[in-house]
Length: 246
Image (cartoon, rainbow, N blue to C red; front, side, top):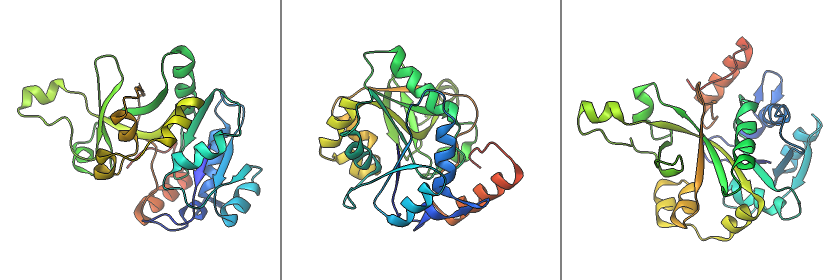
């Protein structure tokens, strides 16, 4: 499921932004379709302009309530009418999405019946990412489940020796849910941590839901949130790059 809205805060109408001759939502749809584990790909939107752009490349579109506060709520609305066991939420601002990430999430849930939802992370190699609040950092428990997400630099290294032993991960905004877990999550009230960090995955943690983390090699796919991100995405597509964060 690809939630896409018109009134994005930092880059309005970004779902329709042109990249290499196609709107961004079309790139996300085409890449999601390349995942081998999925049976159906749907664009969930509240805007007819986005719907028309998606249908132009053959996408199935479901119109949703314009009042949703998050992409997860939009995905959950559509999921109520579906009977799939696993729902993958692919953000509509990932035009350089690696389809293997979608497959890895689906396989993670299939391999672990006790897991309610899963997400993707990649190692942080560039120290600048740790200081960048637009990069969501993730630390895990010993069992590979998410311990905390933050825009701050976590874990904090009190000395060089401690820092060298800690693993910092860059969170990628992809989620695979068991359908019932998604519907339950969508009924939960936003929490204090979620409102503070503006990260809805903290709602799941605060309510005791386990989030399995799939750690993948390589960089994170570029999320297009600003005009500068859009420029980098255009350059990557024009040069034929697979697409990782700058």
